[in-house]
Amino acid sequence: MSTRIWIKNPLAIFTGTEQDAGGGLVVAGSVVTELVPAGGKPSAPVNETLDASQHVVIPGLINTHHHFYQTLTRAFPSALNKKLFPWLQTLYPIWAGLRPEHVAVSTELALAELMLSGCTTAADHHYVFPEAVPDGIDIQANVAKKMGMRVALTRGSMSLGQDQGGLPPQSVVQDEDTIMAESERLVNRLHDPSEGSMTTIALAPCSPFSVTAELMRASAELARKQQVRLHTHLAETNDENDFCNQFAGQRPLDYMESLGWLGPDVWFAHGIHFTPGEMRRMGTAGVGVAHCPSSNMILASGICPTNELEQAGVHVGLAVDGSASNDCSNMMQEVRMSLLIARLRYDADEVTHFDVLRRATQGSAACLGRTDLGTLAPGKQADMALFKLDEPRFSGAGDPLAALVVCGHHRADRVMIAGQWKVKDGQLAHADMADIMHRHTQAAHELTAQWR
Image 1 (cartoon, rainbow, N blue to C red):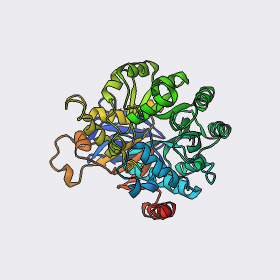
Image 2 (image 1 turned 180 degrees about the vertical axis):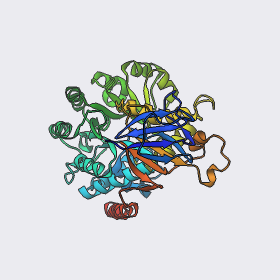
Image 3 (image 1 turned 180 degrees about the horizontal axis):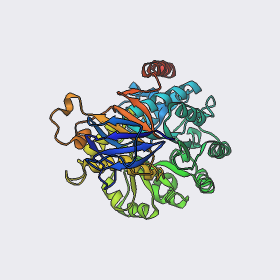
Image 4 (image 1 turned 90 degrees about the vertical axis):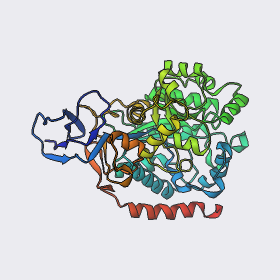
């Protein structure tokens, strides 16, 4: 029989539902089985009890867009203070030197960093496949399984190199037959569509300006055939929109729609520069957007119109984006950043801490097509993060849940994924963070040595 765990009497709890859970919740196996009302007790005996009276409990945060390998090029000197295109052109030659061990340790570090911040599911957009690393997604899947992290791995691609007018060097682009064959292989090998799945695969050409129209269309057709999701960068900067107009004669969303890329199985990264009419078309189609506030600020890309997108019916999730443009992988910090940047666009009462927590959980789950994640409710996966308010920054806080966001929490005390504790007392339960950081630092120095 499954162990039944009562997370008892939390200091505060955000379930994403209207149900009273002041008395906590019960987990059995990998799922939540019961929400306990304030002053109540579980309806059936439990095997374990965790006193959560010092914890704020929330659903596990869900990161909808990342580039794990970029943890190796954080705050890289020659890429600092640049706009998107020159930033990419500076870093592409470095990323072209990736080897299998670089992909493995960068994935391990990124997942550990995310997990410690309260994240339980992470989508990664890996699109750099130099000859030395044709199996980058397989490597990531193996690391995620070892870490016990829930992942949505998106098979990225680039087919337009500098010789064809694109941005990346030829050494990191692939021919389209290889891309399509690898995409199909990965779906068949790794994609698990079942409820409670730990690994899913999506198809993710990097951007409209880094692949051909034929590859975009073929990827959409294969995704529909295999019933997996589609992902790409879109409308991140005005420069990107102008570039799309020049090479395609259309705005990015029009171009993507002409290639079969508007539907409920699609989510775009960034989604900043859309017109009101475009947002209405996206909402009608059921599209999602991964909002990347810190990255958008670092690259001065703009402010995502999150409220207008949601009002139009678009699913809005949250993402840290790559660690070369964030420059960290902390989802709890990203929740706060999403609130602060929204206050530059909207009035103070138009975006609340409830809104940003909802986007980082339910909204993100919707982007990834996961109906089993994003809330703490009976039958949902037992993915949750527990935070203590025991640092000076929280002293005197009147509302524990609001304090989690506005006072700037950044490290979970406990994290559960599929009913298993992965973080205890603020430390990884099954991995040595110091060892991961040592190996990761060595890999970063090795990768970037000739470019420093």
